[in-house]
Image 1: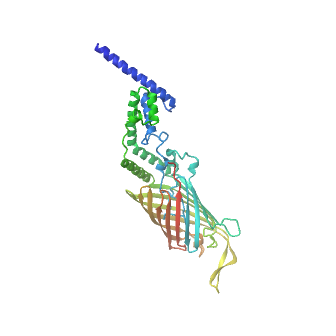
Image 2: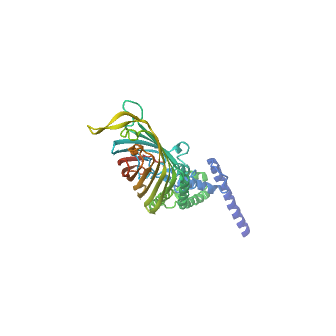
Image 3: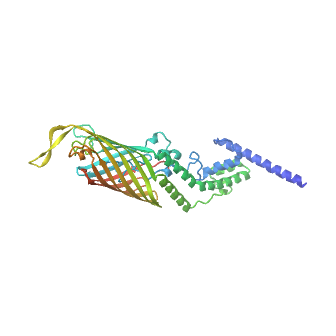
Length: 436
């Protein structure tokens, strides 16, 4: 008799489980969820529902609608301004901005004042899905292009540009940095994944116990908060504000670690006269190609010290120009009619600097200082400044953010030796944020 009771009890439980699976399968099939067929439809349906309800999950980039590309964005990258008034930082980095941005700089030298606009674009926005964090974590760190337009770049009485410049940066370590960041973020979200599994188990129990599983599913899906609703009986894990702050802090640390080093190419092109007429003979075509390296030397919580190094070759093809003679009566330079043939020249260019920064949440205040050296041979007397070579300059820069990706920089350059003008500029940099 006891055996029969046990047998019928087990049979009843087995039949109930089969009926529950059939009901869950019907709902599961109606959702067209991609992937192989699950062994337990109710549990798989519960996992699907839990990922829809919580913002704690991290499964894969395609399944996780809550990990946004902006979380992975390098907030300290700035538009390039290498060699011009827009340069912020004693030695420029080759770490690109994520989407697009620009800068506006005004400043002066011994030769006068100038104002320069620059627009920067990361080409990856044309061939990657910027809403996919798995793609943007890597592509946003690969490279960018900057175009410069001085406000007084058009010659008087002509429609010709007096100066035009382009900068290109390629961060060879950008892809690996993005991969490292994704791995670290996935580890950070592990605890949240465990919390999501608790929600899934709670939903699974409610679905199995519910007489009308479709109604129970709809209540959870629609977040029906009525008293007898399945949704009201889900046991959500408590995610406190302290835990959220800790999560944000860990994500910030993961970004800083991924962007703590770089190695890449610094490429520059200048056409025309970068002195905008103040140095006759300075007009021509200038090309620069170099290697750049940077790495964090010391990282103490929110304070970091980082070195930046660059070495490359500068090529200058000078245009023909009229020479200058001196009026002995008025003691001032005057243009004569003598034409001086242009020439070409190669210079060795290098720079080394240190950057000290302090992070407050997602904003970073930084100060950098360093030396810039350019040397060449066979330069005619008095033309070092025209060729912008044979000098050493001490550069310093202070950058202060006013939003998470917008900064104002004060930049100063003082010659140590050589015929080069000191320079002081104020620049404002801005860049777009990735989708949130």
